[in-house]
Image 1 (cartoon, each protein chain N blue to C red):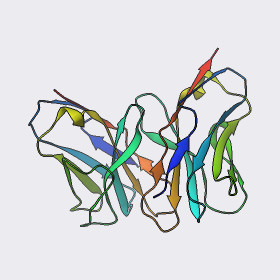
Image 2 (image 1 turned 180 degrees about the horizontal axis):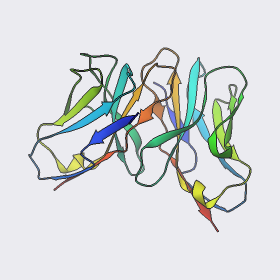
Image 3 (image 1 turned 90 degrees about the horizontal axis):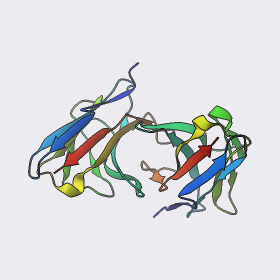
Image 4 (image 1 turned 120 degrees about the vertical axis):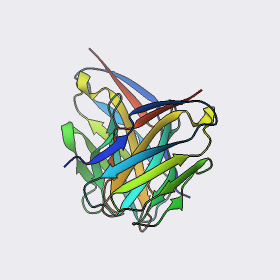
Length: 113
Length: 112
């Protein structure tokens, strides 16, 4: 079965600093990769996704992620964070042909002024 | 386009009571999912549906039942609520298994 590991449960950072949220998954076969963001008391929204093609994927709000097949990783980055980026971030992986994505446990990004 | 809506937004139940959570989507999506979210546990799949009239068990199906009589609606039932079912429940839908999931705003359930 697929597993997804978000290596940090909480990441505190100062405003305007860069940030990286790490995600590793277990399977090296064909996968689709997603990052979602959840603001307080809301549902999840898509930040970005990797289906195929270029390994560097750009998403909304200045976020980007890089698919690394050899390391089975899909880390999320932003060069300069804002207070409004404070939220929970979830990495999700879907094996090709599967109906069901597997979600990581989430990383809480806390941006301090 | 309302997207994915969930009813109710918040509910308090006593142990042993039953209830139904309604998920509705107006995007003509084929696939629908019910998750529960608990602190530190991420999202866990309860049940899902790959089309009208179909349902399947997810990772944590015990104590829940589902129905998808109409393509746009996916109902989650708790027959006899237990305190362990206190959680936030999210519904999601997607048009294709390669695509992103679209989530509802959640239902907060407290079982006393």
